[in-house]
Amino acid sequence: MIKKIDHIGIAVRDLAEALKLYEGLLGLKSIGTEVVEEQKVKVAFLPTGDSEVELLESTTPDGPIAKFIEKNGEGIQHIAFRVDNIEQRLAELKEKGVRLIDEKPRRGAGGAKIAFLHPKSTFGVLIELSERD
Ligand SMILES: C[C@@H](C(=O)O)C(=O)SCCNC(=O)CCNC(=O)[C@H](O)C(C)(C)COP(=O)(O)OP(=O)(O)OC[C@H]1O[C@@H](n2cnc3c(N)ncnc32)[C@H](O)[C@@H]1OP(=O)(O)O
Ligand SMILES: [Co+2]
Image (cartoon, rainbow, N blue to C red; front, side, top):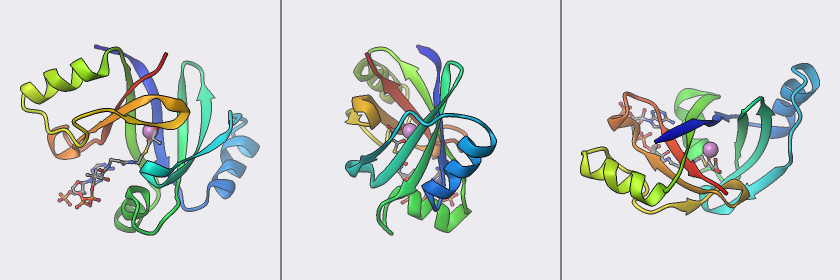
């Protein structure tokens, strides 16, 4: 079902400041920033081998990233797994009793189809499933 870790999502207050560390000091290279309106985030993706780091800054005080930082401070907010046939994966997980945040895929960064599983049903980790061509 899962092909690889697609990305690790890290919530930050200030994307430009975070890039100074990830690019300037750690030497990763952002492949570009993008606003994903539906998720109320501005993101940058930095490839690390076969997986990526996703830095997320909130675009509004009430978005999921702003709420996460308010409660927990900055840090790892989700892990994303690459899957095929996301609709079928979601249907199977739902049938097995896993709590879905998204019953149907939404559009994520780069046009990927994404859907989140609720951390209360995944041992405390917010899991994103991601399918892209
Ligand atoms: C652009 C895209 C892409 O990659 O393409 C993205 O990644 S967008 C990435 C940003 N988008 C998202 O995260 C969308 C999916 N997330 C959501 O729908 C929400 O953030 C929820 C995960 C449902 C949390 O909602 P909300 O903050 O309203 O609820 P809450 O604070 O009362 O949290 C309910 C319980 O879940 C826990 N909880 C909340 N967020 C968590 C997280 N990130 N990891 C682990 N646990 C978490 C809380 O501690 C709480 O547990 P206790 O009750 O024990 O205290
Ligand atoms: Co993500």
